[in-house]
Length: 251
Image (tube, rainbow, N blue to C red; front, side):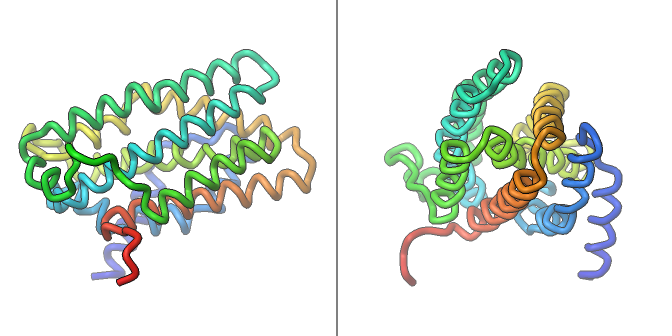
């Protein structure tokens, strides 16, 4: 069964829309293919696609994502300040704003679903702000430190996996789910990341990184590749630990 599952993921990966913008980002995506394949294999995503995911795990994920988005928005705001041209600065500034307004608006709509009411009650979602899990705190801290202390290109490499992997996963989920039924509990979330608007933003961000890679020194390029790969690993951990309800208890 495990071998069959792996072969399915391999096929899905080759079928997914290519967001690369040139030789550098194409090679980069190929390099992280094993991480992407492991991400596709996560039970969280399989269960999300077929609608069987425990509502508590999904609500926990949404709450952790809300914490993450605040830090992610700040990282993109730092990139907007560092950009040396208006189009890049505008893109990062607008992306920073939408990370809070558009996506958190969607989170609010999702958590208002009556099918998630019991899960929200268990996690006290309506009473207490979410506390960052160790993984969420680590990921956000990594992004902010990279954007604040490294070069612009390295900062871009850090924030890009959130665009690229989500766009990729959105298409993988839609293929697995088939025609999303009107009563699919997670249809709204899945559809949001398989959209022309999100694809366009992803292509724009990848294009910025392609240019930065092409202009970078060999030393800086290696650093950019390493940061991109590390952020991809954080993406895997983010889904996995949200599913496991990771917290700070030592037990």
